[in-house]
Amino acid sequence: MNKKPKPTHRRGEPAVCLSISEAAEELGHTRETIARRIARANLEPAGVRRGYAVYRLRDLLAIERTYGLGEQDPDSMPPFERQAHFKAESERQRVNANRARLLQADDAHGEWSRVVREIDAHLELLPAAIAAVTDSAAALERVEERVADLRKRLRAERPAQANDGD
Image (cartoon, rainbow, N blue to C red; front, side, top):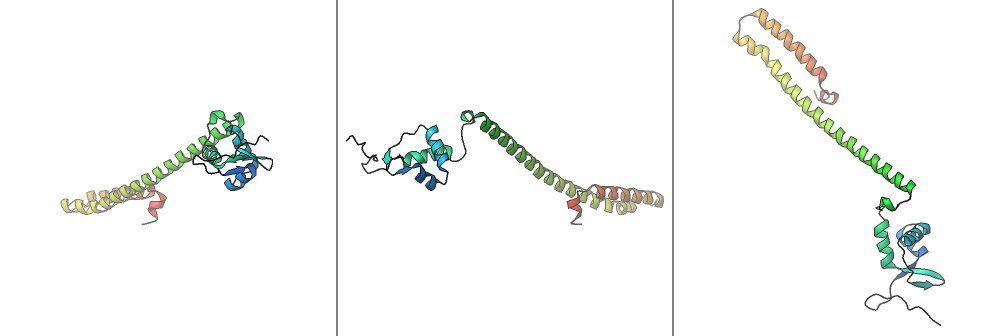
């Protein structure tokens, strides 16, 4: 009758041990996932209960911290999983870069709209300022025409979202 002693904590208290099924239920994974992680970590059973291997909760939690968050060493993955990992990571980085570019474009459109509004406001005052310093009606009329044409072109170039507020 060579029985293996029950696993204990350092303080001499009995350790909490779970079977693969119990660990799967507690950690929210399938039995296969837990068994695969135990095998990958080379975890030895702490004992046997009703004919099934049981593992210390502390060891199972260490495995969960290592493998549970999906943060694995890509070099230890099988080739197909490694390819999928790098493809997904590459796609995530591409999406984040595009998202950052879109935010920058919105900022640029807003700034361009502000600049165009300011130029437009100054162009509106230009004919009156020129009329105050010259008596030439022909020159004033040409300036007014050119300013009106320039203001029209500036308004046409403003970003669509900036035109909504005017």
